[in-house]
Image (cartoon, helix red, strand yellow):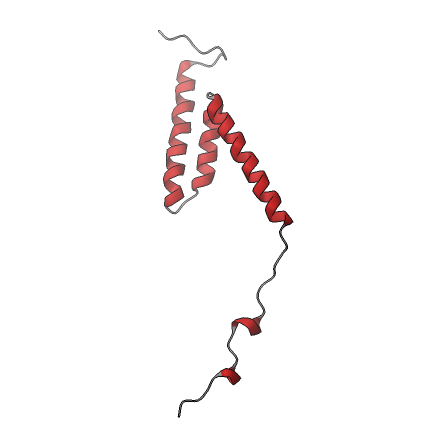
Length: 99
């Protein structure tokens, strides 16, 4: 029989966490290309896998760092308001009549 991990968790719990993590990652990856919440499911799956696998925890940390850098870049960008109505609608004076 396989001994329980050193963290004190039972083997059954560890298998359940790994299965749920991989399932969330697989569904999240599929939903990146299909309509649905792909990225949040990928992150949730990595968070579960990160409890058991250091490589998944490192990947999740890398994603968090990239997200924080992207968010900082968005905050630093100048805010642009909606386009003025005159710029988007053609003026009636610019049209010519067909004779």
